[in-house]
Amino acid sequence: MLTGIALGFALRSFQWPELLGRAISPTIMLMLFALGVAVGGNKALMADLPVLGGKALVLTVACVAGSIICIMAVRRFFPGAGPRRHADAGDGSEDAGAAMSLRHDREDGEGRA
Image (cartoon, rainbow, N blue to C red; front, side, top):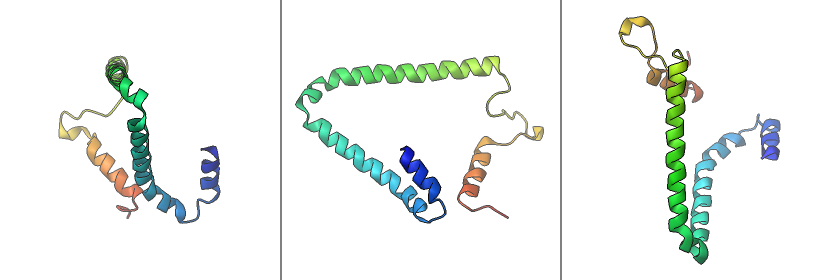
């Protein structure tokens, strides 16, 4: 990974990094497909899949619960943290969805004056 970062940094002026950006999702899908084929072909792993799946479910629920607890703690102890709530339209706060959309458009090269 460090070699890839160094190569990307050294060759950032070329157009191929943009092409690589489009190839990332299909490559990840292909890797996940290959992993699924490998797991499906492993008899021992398939026999243990219900136990592993149960452990994965418990871990997922624990992670989500921990994240929610952390968010609640941050909002309680740091009231100004996070996106602003705009009770009335005249408070000058920005709609988070509109701000994200505007930022996305700018990253795509659109929306510039």
